[in-house]
Length: 288
Length: 181
Image (cartoon, rainbow over the protein chains, first blue to last red):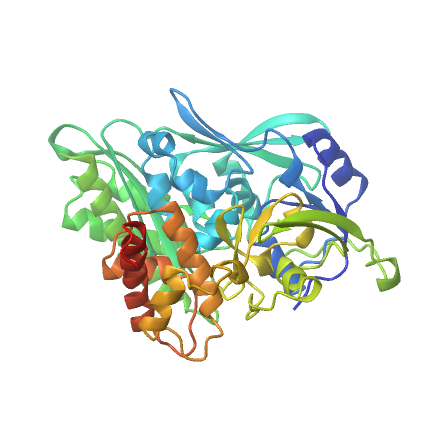
């Protein structure tokens, strides 16, 4: 199908883009278009005006600082995936991106676009949550930073206002003695995950898990921190019993009701399995 | 699902705004006036008559509309023609030499019988071409090749021969580079 009619504008500055959004409630920003254009083709979305961010200067590029990786919102996913500095600072980034759709989609799709789109099954929002990242957004009131924990409010819905533009994504460096892993299951390679899990496991003396951050996608109305599984891992040696307990504990986070793809019970079991697999791989990479 | 948008009257067809777009397609720079909602795939096929780029699912799953956008494979059905302002587009029509000599990827598809009905073939060829330009020394394991090909669907399901063609394309390219072919 084809998109419905819309007005189109291609501003050259963030301020101009924000002004357009503020003047027209039906206006939506267009980044790489790899999520928005399919739903426009299906006419699930019919924005009155598209504000194409493709001409806005300064919205792409990757900077690796001592504390974090800063990714301009319009940076293509494939560019981030193959960025040596970013992946040295946090190797989970490339592992997650390999699961985002296909190469041809990642060549066009942007990091900021995927996070602002906030599909509950998408991998990048899950990555942002697990790593404790944040985003910068600019609106009529100026710039602000929003932590990942405060960003996702529902499927395809963030706490950003319609007048705000996500400008930068920040992912903290991998903490010391911390291993990483991403596991997902999808019906077709590159498809949205039926369930996916990002795991970061930190180990101290004797291999004891001193910190765990896990997040899941595809299992609820938004990407969620798997805090119950984190609690089950913390203090353990990430032994078989602790992994089983973490998997069981995670099931409560699988709140998506039965749908055409899977029942809630199936998703809960799948989530438990993915938590175990991700946690054990992350623990191995943490050493100890 | 998507949250409902505040209502604004959808522009009537008669008020459909036109916009000029200037881009380079297969080496030729051209300017056209298009509706903002025109997909790049439709622009290539209907405005330029380059019907080698096929349209299958129109939501990014099947891959048969894949073209090169600024040197990298992209879905022309998930790109608006107006987004391609200033871009360099390459379609399947540019792949063989003007004298008809097939590109190694095309030659490999022919030799390995990697096409049956052929509908998906232009997309596969452009995706492989892009990948080999990005990664000149690719991993030729079955898994790695299937990963590269996973963004394109063949409904004749001739994947085994497409995997063979990927390997053969690398051989043919290397043979040509050393003057052997």
